[in-house]
Image (cartoon, rainbow, N blue to C red; front, side, top):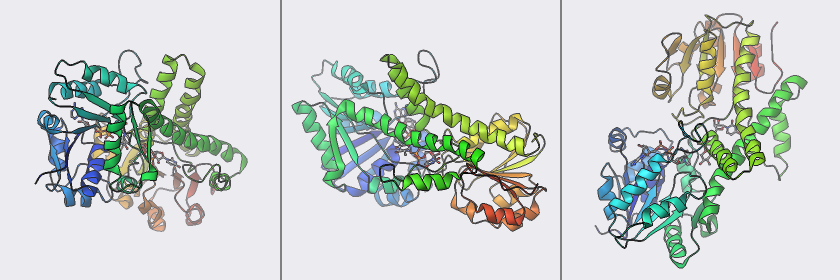
Length: 458
Ligand code: NAD
Ligand code: UDX
């Protein structure tokens, strides 16, 4: 079959896989190929068990794979055949050299640029899908267009706003799609080509066009604003615990103000995920490089509050369990950074586990999807750690339960049965405010939630 366009995506991760599956599903007229250097990941995409857990994704892949969606490790071939190349490689925080701990590590990104250059004999549109520092497109253009083959590359920014756990829904009906380009004749023509892809299913009024720098910076800014809301409500949660105000009531009251809005005001043990912290620190680094130190400090405080909220949770457990958790069995309900994903990157559960292990607690981790990743994250831990898929078994004989992830199933368990199987006095620390605290208190638990007065029997 002859396809209208050949679309390539470099990077078959949490973004590349789902976004390309949706494009392939909505646009049977295009051939979509997703390549990766990780053979195991590509094998998994081609198998019955795809490498990421994401509601609805399995079905999408089954409908498109082999029809117009292909997963492969043949990057060079893919580049040669492509009209458009989305680049969706990882851009983690740099761990070495200048900017370590803040700046984005662009090594994967730059390698991709050089590989595209080496394998291109015709003009191509290159689309930044990864989240990148503002003005990265300029570096990409310089690398790509410094060629003597007469090949022209137009570099666009089309940042991805999907959230894990709801990726398929977010891709199917996005609040907006953002496409940024140079404002030259060629740039605007390339932008139209990308807009036309999304227009196959996204209403035109939800497709925003902008200059390339605005698109790059909008992505970092969106994540910074979302995370800032969580840190803001989490900062207030600490004050609620001192004053008998209830953070969920405060969030509801302020969220009904249409200027504030209700979303991203759920107080928690802290935000996790591969994006928020990384992208804010990247923003902080960029601001410092432009001499905007006050702006950098403002955004860095969002990350600091998040780290403090996690630390506060550990200290709260310790303080309420008679200042020692050494040798006590503590069941962590959930390890994923949020519900409906198996992803554990930057999960607050990781910081809580390590903090409690330092206090010599015995930790038992349960999670419906994230145990394989949790095992990998904690593979250096030799003592005091076990994994258990059944939450009832995890809680058996425990002194305390700490809810780390808002999986729906944790609100639906038989807590009477759990209480009877635990050590007494039994404690619950609800790091997500998802349980029925009064009911638990009536059963006999001592209940500690975020931003609420404790319910204690002593
Ligand atoms: P990921 O680590 O899951 O996937 C990246 C993939 O790129 C990996 O499989 C890796 O092997 C592959 N890769 C690296 N270098 C390569 C190369 N030279 N050639 C081929 N493949 C290569 O990362 P992710 O979560 O999909 O994130 C990708 C980008 O999207 C990041 O910039 C991230 O900030 C951004 N983003 C992520 C999310 C999210 O929810 N995870 C949402 C929006 C944006
Ligand atoms: C985020 C952005 O939402 C998405 O637009 C971007 O493309 C990638 O980064 P993601 O990290 O997948 O998505 O999930 P998100 O729903 O934003 O949650 C991030 C963290 O914040 C999770 O740990 C979540 O539990 C926490 N959170 C979220 C809260 O603690 N309270 C809230 O009100 C919302």
